[in-house]
Every structure is written in C-alpha cells, then in structure tokens.
Amino acid sequence: MEETLVIGGGTSGLFTAALLAKEGYQVKVYEKERELGGRAKTWIKDGFTVDYGLHLVRNGEKGFITTTLADLGEKLELISLKELEILCYKDKKFHPLPHDATEFATTEMITDNDKNIVFSTLSKKGITKESMDRSVLSWIEEVGGSEKLKEFAVFLSLGIVCPFIERASLGEVFDLMRRRIALGNPKTGYPPGGFGVIHKKLTKIIRDYGGDVYTQKEAREIRVENGKVKGVKFAEGFVEAKIVICAFPPQMLFNILDENLVEPKRRELLKNLRPTAGVSIDYGLKAKITEIDNLIISSEDLFLLGMVTSNIDPSVAPPDKQLMTFVAITNREDILDKEKAKVILSRLEEKIKEMFPHLSDNLEWRRPLFLPFINGVELNFNQYRERRPQPDTPGIEGLFLSGDTLAAESAGGELAVTSALACVDKLCSG
Ligand SMILES: Cc1cc2nc3c(=O)[nH]c(=O)nc-3n(C[C@H](O)[C@H](O)[C@H](O)COP(=O)(O)OP(=O)(O)OC[C@H]3O[C@@H](n4cnc5c(N)ncnc54)[C@H](O)[C@@H]3O)c2cc1C
Image (cartoon, rainbow, N blue to C red; front, top):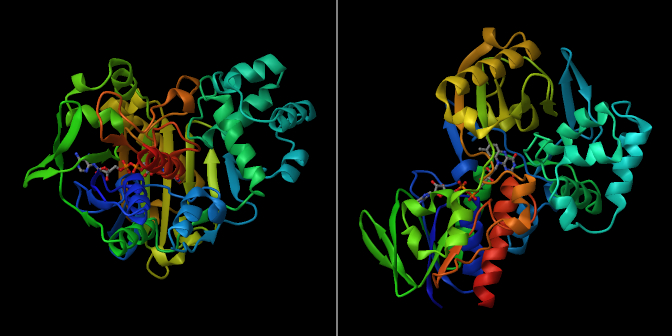
C-alpha cells in the first residue's frame, strides 16, 4: 500500500492514521511539538496530570471517541460524570441544570410553553438545511419563546461551544441533543489518567499495524507538482509521499502550501473559518477545598465551563491535593487583543474565587492559557456542516484534510474523530 504522511499528531491525525493503518496503508505521523495530542495534550506538573484545559468525552461510552477506538480494537475506560451532571452557577449559588428529558420536563428554569416549543422542535425528524442555516435566537423569537428560554438556550449552545445564541446554528445545537437522546442520554466521561491516554492508545494501534509516529518534526512545505502531491519538506530533509493528510486547523494550511494551488472557492473557505476561542485556567491546589464533581457552567458575567478534575479522577492529583480547570468562551477578537484577553482572565479568576473562597489560600500553581483556537470551527449558522470543507482538496491530487473544522458530525474532539472517519472514507473510496 502507498506511503501516507499525516501532518499533525493531535486527535484527528492520530485517529486518521490509526484507521488508515488498519486498512493497510503505510502511515507515518509527523508532529511538530514534543508531545502528541495537540489541543488535547496532557501536561505533567509536580505530580498533577493536567489536560489542555477542560476536557471531557462527549457521550461517554457511546461517543465517537470511545466507539471508534473500540472498532480499532482498544477499549477506553471512562469515569462517568455523576447522574446530576451539570451545576449552573448563578447568584452566588450552584443550581442543578436539567440534562435529560425527565428533568427538563419538570424544571422551573423555563416556562411550560418553552418546554413545548423545545420538545416539538426536537421531535421533528431529521435536520433541515433551514434549521442549520439559522440562529438559535431567531428561532426563539419566531416561535415566541420567553426571555427565560433565551437564557436557557445559552446553556444548550454551550454544548457546541458557541454560547452566542444570535449566531449559534439551531440545527447543530438540536442535532447534538437529538443524538444524545437517541443514544439513551449517555453520561459524559473522563478517561482515567487524562486525555493523553487516548493518544497513547492510538499511537500503539498505529505502530501495531506497522506505521510510526514522530514528534518534534515540523512540516515546512508541502510540495506539489503538476497538481499531484510529491511529499513534505522537514528541517531534516524531504519525505516523499503520494498521499498527505493535513490534520491541523486548515486556517494554517497556507503557511506550508502555496495557496494558488487550491481552487479559489475552497481556498477562501479554508482561510476564513472562524474558530471558537477563550481563556482557560488550571489550578493545582495544596489541599482539597471542594467536593463538587459535576460539570460547572455559568453565563452570569462570562460564558464559562469548569470542573474539579481530581474529584472526578483522583489519579490526576497527588493525594490530598486538588486539580481544577475552568474555561471562558469569548469572541476570538477578544483573545487576539492582549489587553482584552488579560481582562477576561482576571474576570474569570474573580468568578472562580467567588465560587471557591478558599482557593487563593490553597494555591500551589496556576496555568492560564489564552486560546485563539478551542474548537477549530465555531458552529454558527454560517459554518454549519454542509458549509464546512470536505476532506479532499480540489486542485491537488493526494492532499487531504482531517480535523475539527470539517463537514462532519458533532463538535470539538468528537468532530476530530468524525472528520478522521470522513477523511479515511474519502481516501479509500477514491
Ligand atoms: C481548552 C479546551 C477545551 C476543550 N474541551 C473539549 C472537550 O471537553 N471535549 C472535546 O471533545 N473537545 C474539547 N476541546 C476540543 C478538542 O481539544 C479539539 O477539537 C481537538 O483536540 C482537535 O484535534 P485536531 O487533531 O483536529 O487538532 P489539534 O489538536 O490542533 O492537532 C493538530 C496538531 O498538528 C500539529 N501541527 C500543526 N502544524 C504542524 C506542522 N507544520 N508540522 C507538524 N505538526 C503540526 C500541532 O502541533 C497539533 O499537535 C477543547 C479544546 C480546548 C482548547
């Protein structure tokens, strides 16, 4: 089988490589960083195992990460989040948020009319182009939802990491909810030992099938001749390959590929994809200051998500210590502006300290991260799946894409997997 080169050792690159290796391709993955995992990499700090910000496995044992690994022959153990998964922080208190149909039917967070509106929309079959191509807010206004529903819809839209209901795609939000219901409301999961476990398993699969994974190898240039891929230039030399898969956000593709080689419409699409962005903070604490083991969300001053990771998986912190992580989702422009980003970080930290007044006294270390990319693509109505790029590259034979920006199902880490499946499908069928 043909030599296939994957640029990028994040979730999508490793899944793509593992799936191709299983199909008999000679696959080599080249990652520029010292560690694999990309935006889901793990950091070891003084006995703490720290993910790259808050990371959870959507739909747990029934999600694409777990089921695709199972298809590749690897079982992913998961710790399930509690029955009552989500706490909403508001007015200086934590309130349980309904997360399944029964809880939803009895919640007082929205009116009975709002519930009917949501249920009737959910029960409609299939995803229509019209629902994908409109915002959550425009739908609420059209169907006469209350102000409470607008507030609640922010939490639903946080599920696709786009709490901006004026642009979050209604179809994408509802599709994720429908899928979760169809799967029987699986609990969200956390892999014991952190997300790095997933990447270790994938590396093993790739190597077991005869492929390989290299770190600290940065692709400098993708070489194309007469419309066909020839290979990739690295600092160490040129590697020939007829098939090259770029498994990193395609907004960066033209740093290593002559943009004039790509058909103009696709080129503009790739360059202009809008990612989700934010600020994250991890805290290593000297002592345990809270028992909370739920996902925490808030939309009070900031759109934030957080968890006390070591209360879910004690192995990620030394005994008697605690690890917590929070992320604020913002507009990308605010993160690119350093001053604004710093203000957002300090607002985020103030909010967390309000939740946990003993935090400062017990702080061992903190790691802020300014994130111009959380998910590679924001699932707003301009970027619903049919408007996102396909895995092939019109104009260049042998060049494929994989990653959490493509035209595939779900969001974030799951989209990294579904994009890998789509990429492999395209490659094998072509
Ligand atoms: C704070 C935060 C929280 C998140 N929470 C969740 C969550 O709870 N659940 C979830 O499912 N998802 C979550 N996500 C999203 C998830 O991490 C991403 O969707 C996923 O990791 C994307 O994987 P990827 O392989 O597509 O891209 P990346 O992870 O970006 O991987 C691309 C890789 O390519 C490498 N690379 C780039 N250029 C080159 C080059 N020229 N040569 C060689 N290598 C190169 C990069 O170093 C990187 O390792 C979160 C993301 C962040 C940042």
